[in-house]
View 1 (tube, rainbow, N blue to C red):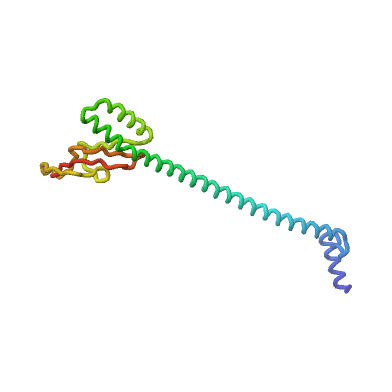
View 2: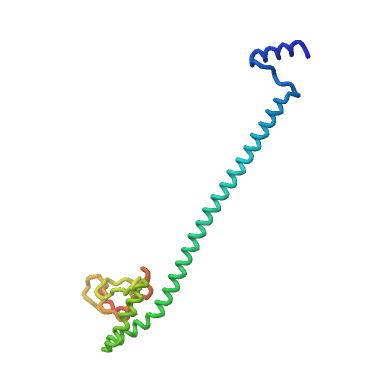
Length: 178
C-alpha cells in the first residue's frame, strides 16, 4: 500500500470513527445479504402489487359481466311477456266486441283478462277526445270539422295498448281535422 492510501484510510477512520471493512470481513457478507434480501423483498412486493391489481381488474370485469347478463335476462323476459300479451290482444278485442253487442256475460272474462295483463304492465291507450298522436294512434278515417287547426280523435275503432311504457299496438281511430 502506498503512503497516500494509508493516510487516506487513516483520515477515513478518523472521520467515520471506525475502520473500513476488509474484503474478507464477515460484516461485509452481512451487508451483501441485507442488500440481497432488500432486493428480493422489493421484487416480492412488486409481484404482490401486480397480483392485487390483476385481482381487482378481474373483480370489476366479473361485476360488469354479471350486470350485463342480468340486464339481458330482464330484457329477454320482458320480450317474452310482451309477445304473450300481444298474442292475447285479439281475445281482448273479441271480449270488447261481444260486450258492445250486448253479450254482458263475456264482459267479466274481458275485465278479468285485462286486470291480469294490467298487473304484467299492459294498459289501454285513452284516445277519444285526445289530440291525434301518430305514435299512439292509427287514423283510419278522417272527418271534416271546423277549421281550428287541431286534429282530435273522435271515435276509437279498435283499442290501442302500451306495455311497459311502449306502444304495443296503436289505437285504430277516427280523426276530425280542420
